[in-house]
Structures are given as structure tokens and as C-alpha cells.
Amino acid sequence: PAGDKPLLALRNINITFGGVRALRDVSFEVRAGEVHCLAGENGSGKSTLIKIITGVYRPADGAEIEFDGKRYSHMSPVFAHARGIKVIWQDLALFSEMSVAENIAFSEVVGRGVRLVDYARIRSIALDALARLGVSLDVDLPLKQFAIAQRQIVAIARALVGEARVVFMDEPTASLTQSETDNLLAIVRNLAASGVAVVFVSHRLAEVLEISSRLTVLRDGRLVGVYPTAGMTQSRITELMTGRTFDAK
Ligand code: ADP
Ligand code: MG
Image (cartoon, rainbow, N blue to C red; front, side, top):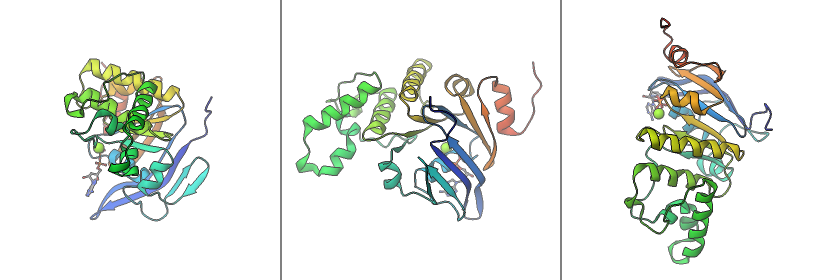
């Protein structure tokens, strides 16, 4: 068992955009093998926190990031990526004209330069990543032939290429149907069972309750708290997210 020791921990995270304090003294931690939900209303700072952890934004001085037992004041995107801290953005950042295989093994495509790309190798990297998710897709077809739910899976598979220790998913189910969502949640569960820490951002509370073992709640750029999901209800999470109390039915 992974135990209680965090794989990734952040403390004293502050960031300001043009005078607006987007995050104030936020802490966050995630353990290997857990699905950890990050919940909060729109604008509460969820995506900003992910961008800090993955090196896109630099936090104000005083921040501490601890990953796999080592301390950092910030990480660059390349550094975080190389250490297995991966993110699936809401817009997926995929290439519709490229094949599924090239999208999944994209780091290999750019790493080698177009002339040196070995398609057999690209293909086998992509098939391996999909196999880890228990999914089969025709990797030779262009991505544009696939619907959003499959593209989401392609983006997850891409995150698994090379080392994957922590995978952030920013609102991955936002444009999925219920059955596509169920399928994605099963994939997320398998990924966590393989030892990857998954940070799942969603404001769909049924899904949060179903998938996560712990929950960090942000409100107006501040940390409300970290809670075990067991015993939580949707109305309790709503209260935490909004700061308002609701009458129980
Ligand atoms: P969430 O993902 O929870 O919806 P965000 O992290 O996107 O929230 O945004 C948190 C706050 O920071 C919002 O008030 C948003 O307008 C602001 N913000 C985020 N990114 C920027 C930016 N690049 N420039 C200015 N303001 C930003
Ligand atoms: Mg967001």
C-alpha cells in the first residue's frame, strides 16, 4: 500500500494576476495510487493550481513543492513532465490531422525530428499506452475521425508515455455523455490502481463522490479543507464550495 506519505505536496502557494489574488496560502497534496478530486466553483483557482504544479505559472516567493522526497521552489514544464507530472488540459491539445499513434507518441515525434521518425516505434508506443488503459483504437486513423470521448482517451494515453507518476485531469468529463463518463471513470480507476496519483478536477459532484478517495476544496482562491470522500454528500460538498449552508431535505 502507498500509505499516507504524499508523493507530491505543495505549501504556501500564492499567485496574483494583475492585482487579483488567484491563490492565497494554498496547500495541496496527493498520494501515489489515489484519485484525489479538486473541487471548487468556477474561478476558485483549480486550473491555476494545476498550472503552478505543472510549471506553467511560477508561484510567489515562499512556495514549497515537494515531489518524491525532494524539495523545489518551482518546476519548469519540461522538468515536471520529465519527472512524470503530466496534465490533460481541458482543450486536450491534440492534433486532429495526425494519426492517433502520432498524437499518443507525440514526444517521440518531436524528439526525433520528422525525418527520423520511425512509425513502427510510434505505433508500438501508442499501442502500449492504450493497452495500459484497456482500450483498443485503430491508431493509424487520423484523430479527426474520433469523437470527443475517444480523444479524451488519446490524451490520457499520451500522458502515460514515458514515466507517469501524477496525472492531472482538468474537467475531463465536461463534454462527455453519462455512458462515456462511466467509461472514463473506469479508466481513471485502473490508472490509480496501477500506482499513478490521479488528480481529477470536476464540479459534477456525483462523479466526485464516485471516483475519489479524498477531496480538496477551494473557494475564492483559498483552501477550504481536505476531506475523505467516504461519508460526504453532494450537499455537503456544495456547502464547502460555496460557503453557504443548505437545508437538508
Ligand atoms: P477554476 O479553474 O477554478 O475555474 P481558475 O484557476 O481558472 O479557476 O481562475 C482563478 C482566478 O484567477 C479567476 O478569478 C481567474 O479569472 C483568474 N485567472 C486565472 N488565470 C489568469 C490569468 N492568466 N490572468 C488573469 N487572471 C487569471
Ligand atoms: Mg478551470
